[in-house]
Length: 193
Image (cartoon, rainbow, N blue to C red; front, side, top):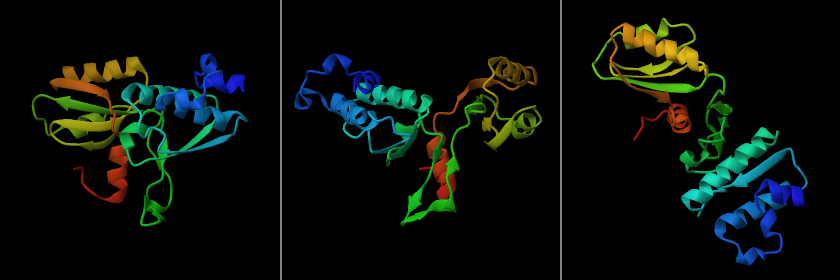
């Protein structure tokens, strides 16, 4: 019990009654009760519902720690942004059926998705990126590109240097934060809102 309380950050509240805890702390308590027997799989339904921003962030940190400790998390939610921190695969259910018939890999830890924006249009942006080692272009237009690339900082720095040297006016470059939403719309065959 103490190990579970420690994992969810409630060791200092062991003598507090559940009804006296805030909503976020009650959510932690519920997860603590669930993990006390150290299950291999943890099923959660809308775990962030009703939580304030700090409690949501704390929940994400907790779920990442459980995931890193080897626990498989299965989370049901309609709010994809809440899952971005810890989701690596998703199953989309529509009309009672799994869309595409299988799980969709959302994120690869070793090869994250990056978003690049350039200030001046270049019709050769896709072609340039596709010619770089380790770059897999997902989508691109004359101003933007979404692609996967290594997590290695030196390799990213070289890619940016190559872009600037080739005359691309890089205005932003960073890891994409909408992997789930992009994957969802790609799988259900709808355009973004």
